[in-house]
Amino acid sequence: MTHQQWWRELPPAAGAFVMATGIVSVGLHLTHYAVASRVTLVLAAVAWVVLAVDFGARLLGDHLRWESEAATAPALTGVAATTVLGTRLCLAGWQWVAVVLLVVAVAAWPVLLAFVIRHWGKRMPGAAFLVCVSTQGLAVLAATLAQEGRGAWLMWGALLFFCVGIPLYVAAFAHFDVTQVWRGAGDQWVAAGALAISALAASKLAAWQHWTGVGHAVLRVVTLALLGLCLLGYVILLAAEVFNKRPGYNIRRWATVFPLGMTAVATLSTAAALKIHPLHNLGVALLVIAVAVWVFVFAELLWTSWSKKRASHP
Image 1 (cartoon, rainbow, N blue to C red):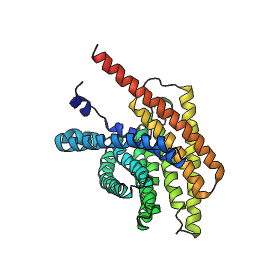
Image 2: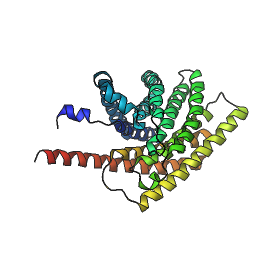
Image 3: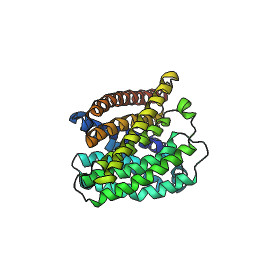
Image 4: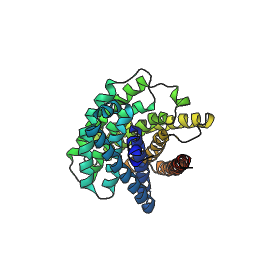
């Protein structure tokens, strides 16, 4: 396979690798595993650059293919991946790069969202929840930048995106084929991942020191409710995995790793924001699981790539 052919075969779902690796990097940063966090950050950033160049090349050189792929739910991994990477870079002190990524994500979000919703089907896989994930990703990145001192008005933007993301989750659930919980190829986990990133956004809003009173109390309750629903979904999906094993590498497995990592980060963030210390220990345990699964899926990716290369060059 030539370099050019490899380039052309990248599917929109490849953005899930950046999402998964980026959020694992965030979790490792929050738990002070600096070296591992930086390594995964570099992997996520390199993959994002490759996918961004590929996205631009298709937009300019193969517009028909770009338009057909933009109509599929996995196209929104581009927006979600950009916000996750931006969040990690913001935590690393690269706030201006994070601002640029937020601008890029905000510009791409309505275009891709409109394409995806226009082509929604009645019974869809878990990728349908990316309409919520991408929207809440904007809320998380905006809130993180506000917390890092880049403008209090960004927290109001985060609140707006958060409020839009919740009904988008409900709409996605209405189109979700629930049998995917049992037979999905990996992206069924996005149903829980969307709740997790919603809980993360809510925890960041609840942690904002300038909001008090009834509104702050409501945000605390909403954060706990979303995290509780996420953990319930996590248990259900995990049970389905145990009783219905799906062997072999599939690119949609990165859409499994992302919710695992996002649930861990949402739990850690909620523990810090609401000062519920037992949740921190749960978040650490969930992060260990997410990292282990990331390593396993990455090893499968390398093994599959090596096997294909060996088969094509006997």
